[in-house]
Every structure is written in structure tokens, then in C-alpha cells.
Image (cartoon, rainbow, N blue to C red):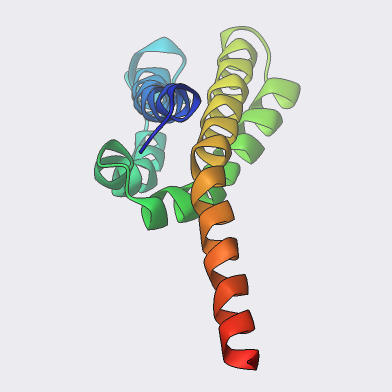
Length: 130
């Protein structure tokens, strides 16, 4: 049922989500925490763990809402990339890149399902109007 592009998009979405989780944990514990020795900001990774299982299982509903959730991390990445200096700004840019990969991959993965749903809805409307 899935073609090569859709399979690639799935791996892009799943991989970028896992890398984003790893980046957020490493960023706030080791790489450039707000306070030496780590910070409570590592808890920002918890919302990313919610859709992980559904994304790995290719759950359509989970992929739909996680594509909206991920935009919060885009916002954080933009703020940190533009306001911080040094390593934190670079990590913000990496976060932006991972979020963009996830978002585009998810949208591309879901596109055939959305087209099929639209087609079924049109058929139902035509059948009901007869």
C-alpha cells in the first residue's frame, strides 16, 4: 500500500523525531544547559515522547496532531537561534532543521491518505444526492 516516497517520508518523520528527542535531552543536560550540570528545561522533551509510539506505528491520527505539536519546537528553535549566542544558537538551528524535516515528512506521508479520504467523501456526497 505504501510507495517508495511514502516509506522514505515515514523514515524521515520517525528519524527526525527521535533525533529531536535526543537533541533536546543532550542540549539541556550536557551540551549547553541553562545552568551548569543540567537544567529542568530537559522536561521540554516530554511532549515529544507522547507521539513517538504512534509515529513509529504509522498511526495516521497521531501523525496528524504531532505535525501541529512539533511547531512549538520550531518556535523555540527560532527564538534560541536568533537570541542566543555560540553553541546554543547552533543547536537552535539544528532544532529548526529537524522540526522542518519532521513536518514536511509527515505532511508528505499523510498526503495519499488525505486524497483517499477526500475521494470517499465526494463519493458519499454523490451517492447521498441521488
